[in-house]
Image 1 (cartoon, rainbow, N blue to C red):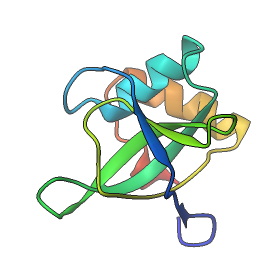
Image 2: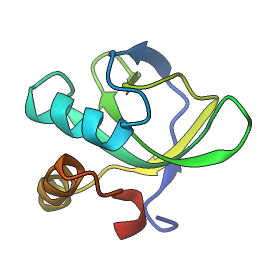
Image 3: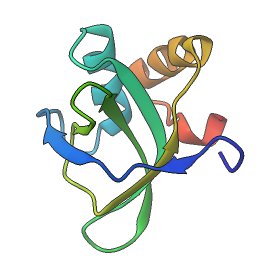
Image 4: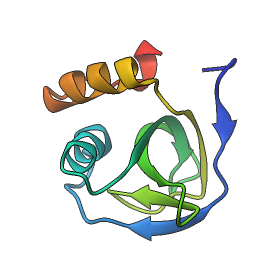
Length: 101
């Protein structure tokens, strides 16, 4: 996370998903073709606390694709294609992925 992570200060587009299910929402949106890229890491929530978090990334729109609630700051990594496969598999079973990078 420290070597590959970066801040994502982009416009935010909301894609409605299940509350508190950011990893699963992101995995489902990615496999369903609704988001082109995955980012996983941490975000500052409404209570100003860093949370494990995953979201989508749309390079064409230069936007973060948020599937739960808008956060105030985002920091994470874009998984490689192999890591994306593992992310989707684990997230579909409810395992948090950010701790595995």
